[in-house]
Length: 121
Image (cartoon, rainbow, N blue to C red; front, side):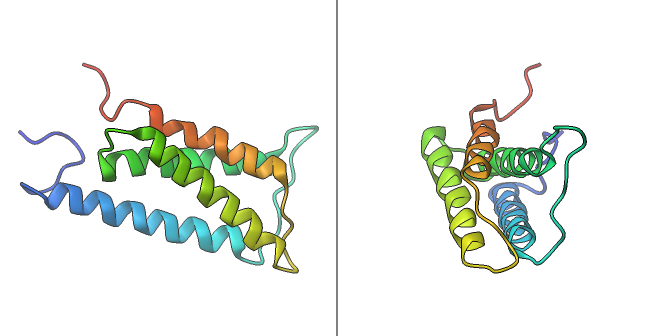
């Protein structure tokens, strides 16, 4: 029986993980840069920061599965660089605003790359 999340044999599972990661990255980038209404939090809950944490956490988990990194620190650095890129790109768009707090939230979410690849049994 194949482990969950693996399709086919050999490198097909890895290829599928790459495809899922790249698709998630493209969707996240388009949503972060799209002229969408900004989420507003309820009574002091910074919903936009929670979105950054959640999206970067998902990307972190997907990156860890796709790249099977022996050095998750390199993946973490790449994801923080991606979060910085998003903020710089948002600064250039008239319908978006860049915030250092969003970059920090993304860096917190990206810590998910340090989670184990597989659930313990």
